[in-house]
Image 1 (tube, rainbow, N blue to C red):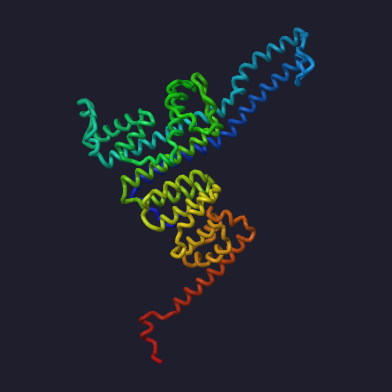
Image 2: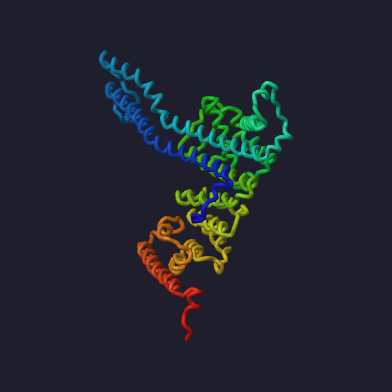
Length: 443
C-alpha cells in the first residue's frame, strides 16, 4: 500500500535531500547499465564471430575438417605458397581479435566501471551522513583532536568557515579508512544501530575490497583482499574459488547482487540516522520508508521489500496508520516471495474488528479470500475513497487481477458505490439546517 498522506517537505528536508540524492544516483546508474548492456553485448558478439570466422577460414585453407575425425590422429598438410601467405595474413589478425573477443571486453568494461561508481555512491552517502551529523551537532567535535595551521586559519572569514573545514577533514579521514572502521565510527561514535541482522555487511565489505584491487591492482587478487574480504559471503554462482594472483572480474549477476545490497544498506542507514538525529520529523521518515517499500513491491523486488519491511518492524513510527501501512507491505513481501508460513503468523497479529474498510480489503487480499474482499470493497470506496487506480495498480491486488472477472466486478462495485454515496450526500444536503428548522411551521 502507498501512503495517502502528504509528506511534510520542510521538516526533515536535509534527510529528504540525502535520501533522494542516494536513490537518484542508484536509479541513474541502473538505467545506464540497462541501456548500454545490449550495445556492449552486440559488439562483443561481433568480435567473437570474427574470431570464429577466421578460424573457419584457416581450417578451410589448410583443408582441415571442422569436425574432428576420431579415426585420424593427425592431419598432414601440403600447402602452396599462396595458401601459406593467406594463413600468415589470418594469423596476424587473430591475436588482435582474440584479445577483444575471448574476453568480453565491452561488457566487462561496462560492469567494472559501473561497479566502481556504485561503491563511490555509497561513499558519497557515508560522507553526507557524517557531514550532516557534525553540522547539526558541532559541539561534538570539541572532544576530537583536530589540527589547523595558522596560515590556514588566516584564510577563513568566520567561525562557520572554520567549522566546515574541520568537518570536511573529519569526513576525509573516515572515508580513507576501510569499511570496518567506518562501521565502528557509526556504531561507537555516532551511536547508530547498523542493523547487522538485516544488512549483510560482509558482502558490502567484500565489494569495497574488490573495488580496491580493481582500481589499484589491475584486477589482480592480493593478500589484502584475501585477508579482509569474506568471499564465502557471496553467492557461489557469482564468485568462484579465488586465489592470490588471479584476475577478478565483475559479471552482471555479481553487479546486480551488490547493487541490491548497497541500496538496502543505504536506505536503512539513512532511516536509522534520521530517526536518531531528527526525531521531530519521524513522520516524514515513515512516509519515505513506506514509499520505498511500495516501489520495491511494484518492481517485484521481493527480497528488498521483505528486508525493509523487517527493518520497519523494529522502528518506532509516528502513528498507528503508518504502522498498518508498513505491516501490510511487509506481509505483501512475504506473500509474493512465497513465505506463506511467516505470512500466516503476521496476519494473526491483526485485530480486524478495529480495522477501517481500506485495511480490511488489504487483509482479505493478503489471505487470498476474494469473496470477503469483494464484500468489503463498497465500504472502502465510500468511506476511504478508494478509486479505480488503486485497484488496478497496487501490487496488493496482483493476484486478484489475474481473475478474468476482477476488472468487471471492481468497475461494477465502483459505479454502484458511487451512486449510493451520491444518494447519501444528496439526502444529507436535503436535510434542513438548525436555523432552517426553526423557521419551519409547527405541526
